[in-house]
Image (cartoon, rainbow, N blue to C red; front, side):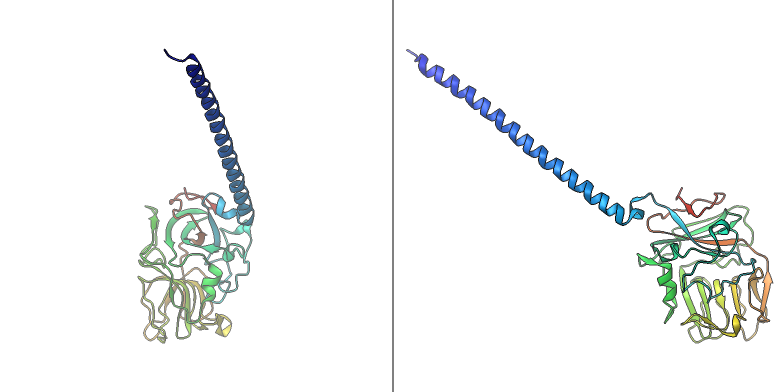
Length: 298
């Protein structure tokens, strides 16, 4: 004979156990949900604070215009002008037509640099490099003149594009030569702010006036950035050439932005040269695209 009392007790225990389990599960789920909610709230708070402190790092990748060189606007951006003091030059309104330096962008950390040859803001040629050392501004890089002679990239450009109909490429100081970027290349009493290692880089004590690029001076103190003779031998853009001082008296420069040193000879302007920097954009728009103070990678 089966006890009905025993069977009833077992049913009650089973029902109680089921209810206890359900309450326990609901409690665990509620507690877990509260924990997740709190974690999400904390994470959002951290992101809001971080964004307020540094909104640039949370925005889409962007290139910022740091400098523009027009070698025929009457203002000479030689070795001594602008590069190491970071003072504003020109205005935003004429930034892509005249010499220009953004003192804000010049102080921003830069991991990538693009050098762009353009005509009235339309890209004709571009090279993009990744800096070997990240997080250093152009101001800090160009102030580092003693001893100077820094090769600041490695492996050559990560992007290089030239328009099919571009002219004057063979002796262009940026697009007519290969290699990495060299900054503050001082030699004897000469200096060039930006040159490429694929060209001729003069020895430290060799006074041959034969390294060429952007921001040049053939009579200066390259370790302090001082130009002798009132900028007599300063010149903005010098073409690639083999014209050593001992045997050559005809140094070809672009445009008319040069000192009155007798060996400096004006020549055609190949374009404006814009320098853009970014912390996270590593691709630049292709030839034919339009430039602006800020530009997205694509």
